[in-house]
Image 1 (cartoon, rainbow over the protein chains, first blue to last red):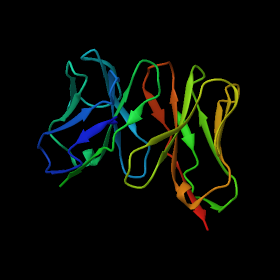
Image 2 (cartoon, rainbow over the protein chains, first blue to last red):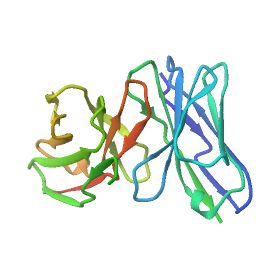
Image 3 (tube, chains in turn yellow, purple):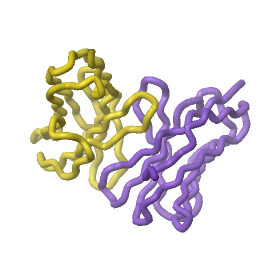
Image 4 (cartoon, each protein chain N blue to C red):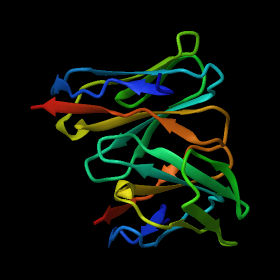
Length: 111
Length: 111
């Protein structure tokens, strides 16, 4: 039974570019959340998707957007990349009110 | 005041001893509490969840919750070098809601 899978594992971009990160939830999970984790800090909530709609959003600018597909997979898009966007981006999935399980993350580096 | 606070450590513990980690949270309406373990360069892994006051034991791990004091702790008994990691405390205000993380406590278990 595959857990939460994310792609790509690593990505290098330059300032001003756009990036798309992908996440497939654990089998049976229908809710996907995205978190940003800067080096040495705890993860920060970006947004949560359920039934293809954004249900909650953290304190992130509109440059951060997302999407959930009918198969529950999700994408995180970041436009106009800044140096400060360099971080580990984590996807977490859950079913109902069960605890969230995290994928291995995408390490994004901005040059 | 941060919503979830942890001592960043490092907490140095001899092999076989008990590691005691603490976490405080600011929002009294918080309902669910989690401990995640994160190895360097890896994603957070759920090790304990606790929802009501008191103790919850799972193997070598015990979580303790005191909602009146807004305090949650994690005890690791018979600490092993493989327990060396960063331990993240996470709080959920309502079931199915976002997770708010502390900054993590780094634990070093020395042989």
